[in-house]
Length: 265
Image (cartoon, rainbow, N blue to C red; front, top):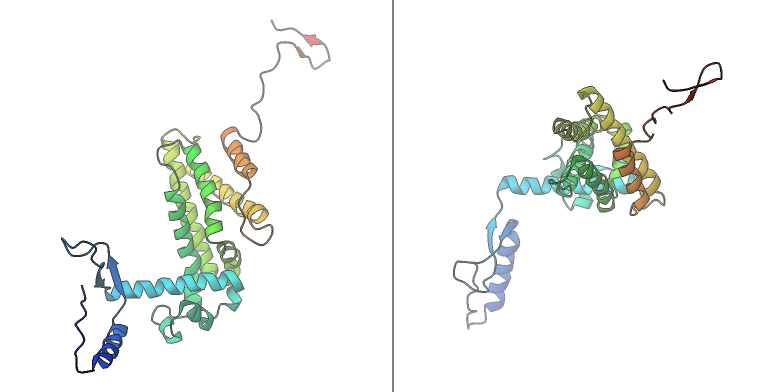
């Protein structure tokens, strides 16, 4: 805990304060820990220095966040290193401590954003309910994420052209995570007995549904909106009941091929 000495009486307090301010400005970024020294009531939070690795990770995250905002606002083509570093508040030279090229950052942007999305969805999915209800939770959370991170759809849609390597990696990450969840549900008897190959097909169907529905209902007015309730209910009905009703049993009295009525027995 830092204490401030009593200023001297010889009129040098102002100079001392200036020197202290300079020293403080040179201090590295620090983490703040809750609570003060043991037994101290109302003490200021104790602070410790960040490690070099932690400082590096913070700067890297600043660059990711800045790239997300710039790409979301202007698109990949206009996401220059100058714009990204200005958004992040770091020098252009700092960029090359973390990424060899602009393209390297752009190829990592979508996969990293996708991982954040998966975590966002995971914490909003109930673990103590059947798979059908968990899927409804995941579907709803996806649209909540779009409201939190409206840049995501543009990052995703433009990536196939401007960051194809990142686009393919993102699709693999999302699809593999989704398939693991459905296989787990199948093994518990909560998902139909699809083969692994069929589950892969189902996963891409469900991923495609999210993409098209977000374009239709969330970004219809070029701004992230709350998805309507009927989108959620339609999705739930389709998954739980299917699109078509099961064929009814044939009636006891049917028409024979020659047009005559035939009786059972």
